[in-house]
Image 1 (cartoon, helix red, strand yellow):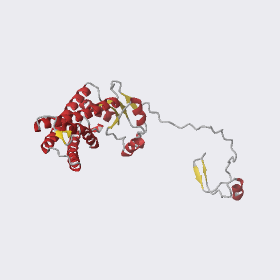
Image 2 (tube, rainbow, N blue to C red):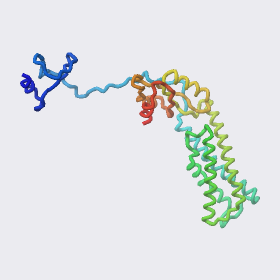
Image 3 (cartoon, helix red, strand yellow):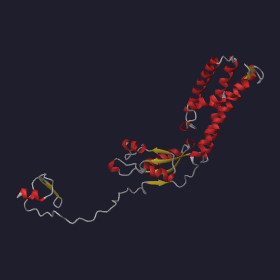
Image 4 (cartoon, rainbow, N blue to C red):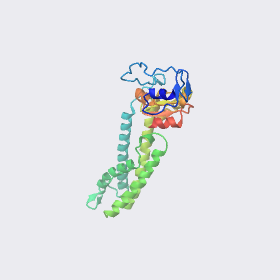
Length: 287
């Protein structure tokens, strides 16, 4: 009887040794003789397109309505351009002051040319070395001491470049003039950057020139972090939305963060310490 049952099924010659009874939620290792099984059931028509379940994220993030601010793509470009101009002015002014102190004039000849042209030609490599030293990297502008440290590194590299070029081209540059111009250039650059930073802080205090921040975390932790950011307006981190993880029983999913970023136009994501935010979910969000 068992063999007849097995032959009645189109199994390609493979014996049916066990089955799952979905009606009784039981697993059998043999086919009972009294099993009333319809071998040719009438199945409903399969839809041509299977709908994909979507996670509803309307309640997963919140837009902060009073966070109107300029887009960072515009003000940051202007700020970097202003720093480049200030750096070029610093090297020219330092060179002119060094010429006046060393020679008493700015029209001093130098091997078929003049020191004035030499100073003007130095602006391009000076700005290039500043860029190579990452002194225009946006995340370090306006806060901390890293910006000033990179300016110091650029001064050392620029001094080395002048010494190498003068030696290779056999340009007899007055050492006293160079020894005076380089420190002046460094001091002027640092002072100008400090003044530019103070102007930027004033703009940020007025609500302009700020990064648009999306907070990620549980409601309590995100609001606590928001209060800390509000207490430091010079940091330029303006909260435009809050986003909480969904699916906490699965470790907290942050798959909807990208949608929230596009909705509020954020350029910075700040993650608050929350039980629902795991290292794995952060790695997935970063990718």
